[in-house]
Amino acid sequence: MDLTRLAVDAGQFINRAVQYTEETLGQAERTQVDSGLEELFARTEVTKTRTEQIISQTEVLLQPNPGARLEDQLYERLDWSVPPRPRASEMLGDYMSQAGTEIGPSTPYGTALLRCGEAQKQLGKAERKFVQSTNIHFLTPLWSFIEGEYRVTQDERRMLLNKRLDLDIAKTRLRKAHEADQEARSLNANPLEDDYLAHVSYMFSFLRVKWLKMWAQEISQAEMELRICQSLFDRQTEITRRLLEGISNIHTSHMQSLTDFVDVQACYYAQCHQHAQELHKQLASIPAVFCSNNWQSAICNAVNQPSTSHNVAKKPQGLNQMAPIPSIVIHQLPSFDQDSLTASVNSKEMRHYIGWD
Image 1 (cartoon, rainbow, N blue to C red):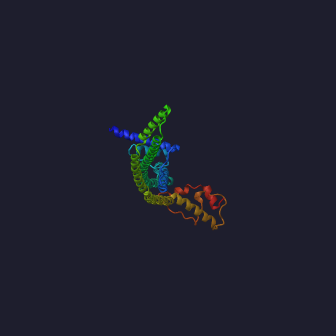
Image 2: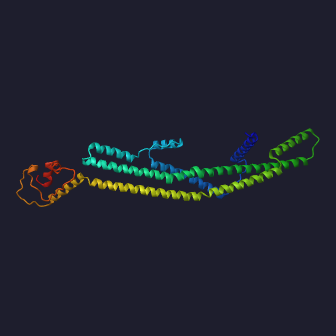
């Protein structure tokens, strides 16, 4: 390790700390950066803050469970692969499929559960694709800005701050060197008196001037250091300005990522709508639903039509002795016994619907 270089860096760090503290307390002058650069700094900070908020809320949208999000972040920090986690729709689909299998796929309710389970699994797969696409096309570019461009900007901004502190330190040294020179000239211009106090005062004044010159260096050397610091500060200001002006390109890139996210979201919702419509059609085609609807429509038609016979017995008859109703047409349904389904209808309700009671 180079001890000389280490000592120089330590001295430079101490000088910058002293200058920064004096500026904070209002005891030292500060070189102001132009307003255009300050606006670019503010614009970059706003972009960074809002981007972090968008990322955070998007992660909440993709994974509402805070425990699961914390676990995923822990895996990412440890550079471990995140284990696959089933989506809520997929788990619901599994439960519905198991319930349909246990209840019986030959029953209407079991069939409906099986079909709903398959639809929920398809919704879970579509949601999984939506999450993957969002991470790739939306969150990754935003994280790239936070971890890449913004960090580079902050490094250049810290470098600019250091150059500005060095410039102000050089200005302070030059000012103190001029003050020491003026004091030395005034000290040499005043003639010495013969008393002891005058000699002592002159000695202390001479030592003070020498110490100021040693601390502030010579005027010529301080001026040369000031020119170097000014040149470095101007160069760093230009570098930082060019880097910050790239925020417009970053906004354009983020806008493209936002458009991709909206496209992915629209595709996801379209798939969900398609799966839901298909499930609705499948549920409507289940025989139990048709049977219930046909019975209700047939009974309503029978009530509305006038009776063809005026000699209907007022006493209730059994289900096997009922006269046939011409207006009721019962369709033969697949996978279901028509006689057993007819026998399952309560005779009292049938008599009430037809008008025998």
